[in-house]
Amino acid sequence: MKLDVDVLRYLSKDDFRVLTAVEMGMRNHEIVPSELVHRIASLKHGGTYKVLKNLLRYKLLHHDSSKYDGFRLTYLGYDFLAIKTLVNRGVFTAVGRQLGVGKESDIFEVAREDGTVLAMKLHRLGRTSFRAVKSKRDYLRHRNSYNWLYLSRLAALKEFAFMKALEDHGFPVPNAVDCNRHCVIMSLVQGYPLVQVNQLQNPDSVFETIIGLVVRLAEHGLIHCDFNEFNIMIDDDEKVTMIDFPQMVSVSHQNAQMYFDRDVECIFKFFRKRFHLNFQETTDGDDGSDIDTDEGSRLSFASISKTAGFLDKELAASGFTRKDQVVIQKFIGGSIEESGSDDEGSDDGNESETNETNVDGLDSLHLAEQDVIHKNPDLNSKKEGVSEENQQNSEAGQGSEHDRHNASDKEDDNETVNENDAELMKRIEKQRRRAVSAVRGGRKSLASRNSYKDKGGKSSNNSKIQKQLNNW
Ligand code: ADP
Ligand code: MG
Image (cartoon, rainbow, N blue to C red; front, side, top):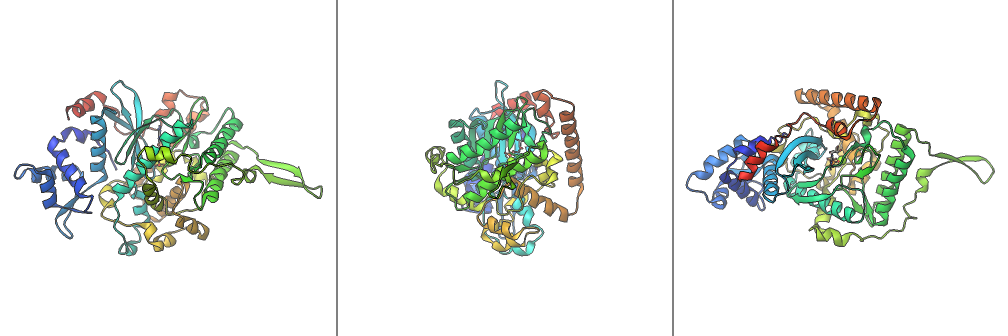
């Protein structure tokens, strides 16, 4: 989905008033009846109609007349509400280029008044789940009503709360700046995802740092659950930052051991393959023979002294409640396939891009197809390529980036490659080539490292947009 912030320039106070009216109506209605929109917005006679037309034109609303005449917000409409609120709060003044297209998020640069650049993550739950079931429309009749916007808001809140708490405890995470609706503002991490790095000066110490993080998280009562080369950023000084927290669970989760082992295993596999670290050690067996031991299996979850619940207070302080946790945990994931870095596809550069094949126009479908996979076991079990073991895992309600990535790949295999896919593939390939040559050609400056994550989105047009936003 394209976030064309230029549209913001054409939106008036009344436009936002009506947009907000629809948002308010959506607390109780999937589709907000036109009459209710009119009433909440309470614009002068006939005013709302004109505004609605404008909002539809920019795809900020979706019109639905299947049951009755009504409207709902699209992700784009939700984006604009969040952006406007954050701009009004003075959190940032301009939206710049796109940094990444995640499986269930879009990341943009935003700029503060003083020119400081931050990262804005817009959560987009439902994007992949919708894709996962769109070839299986039969199941959609079992769908339960669910609001993707609401779930995205919870995911953002959870991410913000965890990031803040982790930061307070000295973990290397982005600085959590602010959060509104489905949008998280954080500091911009220098460097790029580990998956894009082919050479390290000190692979051993980077490996140790990363594994140390998994252990320290567990000591603080937490498991990342998606700890892999896509969610670890590294800079020129080989300083590590971890990102992407909506799927984190407590060490008291019933599948904690499995998630912990999987996180650890992902890192071992990746370092073994990419940096040829050799973890096989030879020790003497009882009978005097040599036996191989894998260090991965020696990192035992049971042996870590964990303080479950340690972060609870901090999380609650950010407004993220236990109830929120239960709701979001039920939803996030939903499909687990083979995880790990053994998929050479990870060499394809930024996972975020390869994850996404065709999102244009999907925003208007998210709420129309209000299906919830976790409430319909059939959907999970019928998904292509889901191994039996992993299906069981999926019932635990968690999925990793790898899982989601792989699931998406398989879906994509089954789908006709359309023009958008071709265009995207071209961009991915170009980026991959740039990434590879950047690594081969020696170290580049931080700025240039970051620059190849640019997906050709609109470059910052700070002053123009800033002026417009300030006017609201
Ligand atoms: P998702 O949940 O969709 O996987 P992530 O949080 O992992 O989203 O972000 C997707 C990509 O966006 C990352 O791989 C990284 O390239 C980029 N990104 C995310 N957060 C930041 C940040 N704070 N600074 C710079 N780049 C970021
Ligand atoms: Mg990620």
